[in-house]
Image 1 (cartoon, one colour):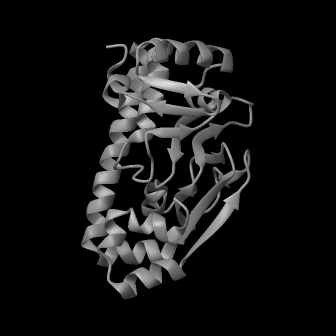
Image 2 (cartoon, one colour):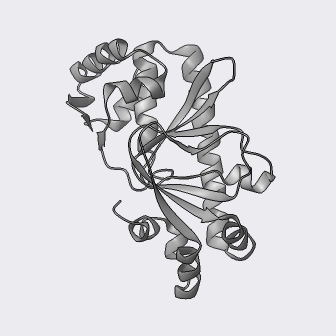
Length: 224
């Protein structure tokens, strides 16, 4: 993704808007650059925008005042998120942090609600999005309880190539081993060992700062 227009063209609901409706979406959406390590949004703040990753990589996480922290999921280019908080009209219940410098689209709440009230394609998109996200989080819980570290890492990586959640992603992911560790909740050293095992299995190729997925279905099934 290079621009907001690119992201909208890759999004099924946006392609079905009229020219006037699309112009309103552009008018009510701003793109901001968020530095690596900075917050895209914070737990407890009012929810004023629907958010999308134009380009970059962010993680959804929870950081407690006690110092405990956990990462839920990585969000890559083309993905929209935060619709649940908007529809529930409650303070945000999680943090989103940029793992690298990322460009984030912030759509105004009133534009989101207008689409919700007037666009059938937008509502269909949200149904699919929420269903996919629910399946993703159920899968994360299952993986955590049943799989070893290597398989959990494989599933974590595979989840970032969901074509419905992240239509802008390709089978090449620019990500460091440190970033993978932050997403999967394991140490950088353990990431290196797991990637080597997945590479030996012919599922991916690990180069400096880049992963190329060779067998996405195999990655999704690894450890079964």
